[in-house]
Image (cartoon, rainbow over the protein chains, first blue to last red):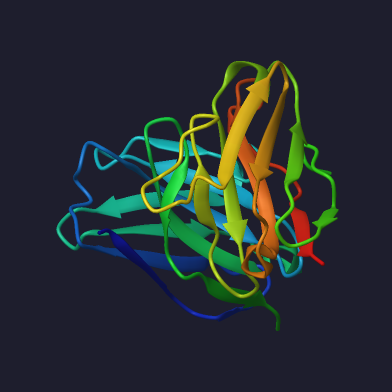
Length: 119
Length: 110
């Protein structure tokens, strides 16, 4: 059973870069079965896909965030990471990492981590 | 404003059946698989339905999914108070080149 765990600062200042890491356990991030994705949810609002990455490094980003997003993978640590630059208060959200199965459903999720953008 | 349209809320009595709709277009639901997620307050979403109508292991057959044209529907039979949650639909949008979600539907079991 795959388990995912997000980690990173819970508070980021406006204009700075949000950085989060997702650690995968119970399986290899190099598995050909999955992409690995980030989704966020502002408080009281719906889900927004941020982007996804394959273990080879191939990435797909939400066009609305593409200019500010970088997702990378570290197979040696069984982790993948999210960087979101030039953050504003609108980026305040719970950030989830998840596995992305073949037909683009998110089947295993981390517990989520709240990131607040505030000075 | 979400790309996929869901009713903000639905309600039904325990033991009854409820359906939650998800409306889109030919660039998303019309030509791609739909998945459904259940989310309790303060917890991560959980996959309920994938590929329009398939249930992951462990999801009871009280939950069902269907798709017709540019709309999808989640059905829940034998409602229980424990089914009170937010429900989201999701799919790929070929025009946007993005995964898109509905705005979510809050289910109340009266």
